[in-house]
Length: 161
Image 1 (tube, one colour):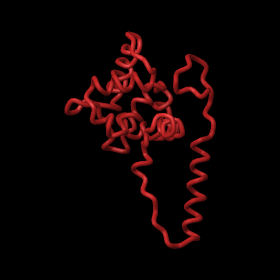
Image 2 (cartoon, helix red, strand yellow; image 1 turned 90 degrees about the horizontal axis):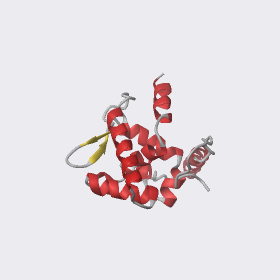
Image 3 (cartoon, one colour; image 1 turned 45 degrees about the vertical axis):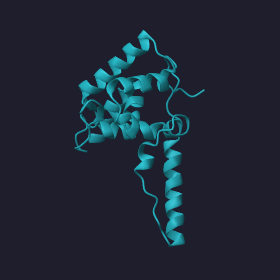
Image 4 (cartoon, helix red, strand yellow; image 1 turned 180 degrees about the horizontal axis):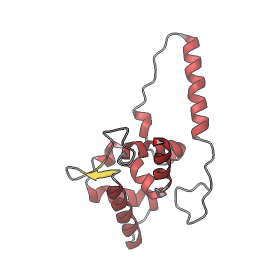
């Protein structure tokens, strides 16, 4: 039941909102002030600054804050997520889902490390165990990189070419 609620909540997020959540996983953006963060998001997501991009970003931040996924703390935005069982107010969990959904894009094109910086490489002396771990990691990567459902609508810079 928790996964069903989480899935419904995640599907309601726009690509911009997912992008914001993933960006807040990066220490350099999480530590930035609201104006610096907004300028970085506009530059990375749209590549330009206009009144429309400012309005869209402002609305996206307001919706994320209203849903309880982000909050302002000490003059910067922060992901919520101290309770992993609270699916309504778990910005960190939603950020991980968004990162996993389009990991290749975030890592290669945007330079976001996301969960990669949190995952430690296991130091194993046993070759059989190392082979099993490598096989498991490759299976996980295949699932994460599977093509997502296409949604008709407005194309953004994050859409595949």
